[in-house]
Structure formats: C-alpha cells, structure tokens
Length: 173
Image (cartoon, rainbow, N blue to C red):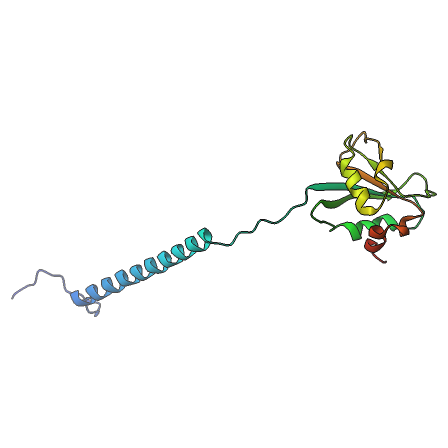
C-alpha cells in the first residue's frame, strides 16, 4: 500500500490548517499595530502637554528672615503661640521662617526689642518696620554656635500686645 511521507497523528487532534495559521498571524500583527498606535498617540499627547504647558513664575520675597522668638514677658507659651501664627507669614518683601522659640534669660522685659544675628542689620530693620518697632534701636549680637542660622532674634516684652502684627498672629490655646 501507499504510505504517506507525513507521520500520522494518533492523538485524534486535527492539524492546524494553513488558513488558520494565517488568520492567527494576521490577528497578532493587527494587535501589535494597535498597541503601537496607542503608544504613539500617548507619546505625542504627552510631548504636546509638556511643550505647551502653562508655567507661572511665583513671586518670591526678596528677603527671608530666620527668626528666633524669645519670651521675655513671662506669659506662658507666648513665644510658641506667636511662632505658630507667624510660621506662614510672607509678603512681597519679607518671608518669616521661625526656627526657634524659647524663654529669654529674664522674664521681666518691659519693651519688645530685636537683635540682629548678622552684622548687616538691614533685614532686621525691615522686620522691625513690619512689626512697628523702632528700626534704629536694633542691637547686633552674633551667636557663637548659630547652627540654626538664626538671622534675627525677637525678644517679647510686656508691651507685645501693642504691636499689631504680633497681636494679630498670636494663636489662641
């Protein structure tokens, strides 16, 4: 008898026809093309978004004051309450960053005063004007170990309530 050159399948499965292989191949090619188009559309949209995005220049203050607040009037917790109130203060000229609060060595200071921790007292003078303190009475006393980089120290005296900016920014308990 005539024997075919192809081995006969004994598992009962039909061999995949040529037409089915071509259909699967086309389906795979179309799937790859669709994924490529989706990725291409995504890349183009992201590049347009990045290149034509809206950018704004935010105004930043000219000077940043790293402020230490010392309580010299004996009111419990006043320095920390004022620090909480002034922590986000900023305008066109000045931004205040409170870096330290503590009690002054004396608790009977009558008048609020400022000490510049830098030899240049201009930033302390600007803060004094904002607070309504006399700018010509700013003392200069650099700190030995100024690891917090304090630029100005504000010592609160018994008159702290007469200073509008301070009174308006003290957080209540």
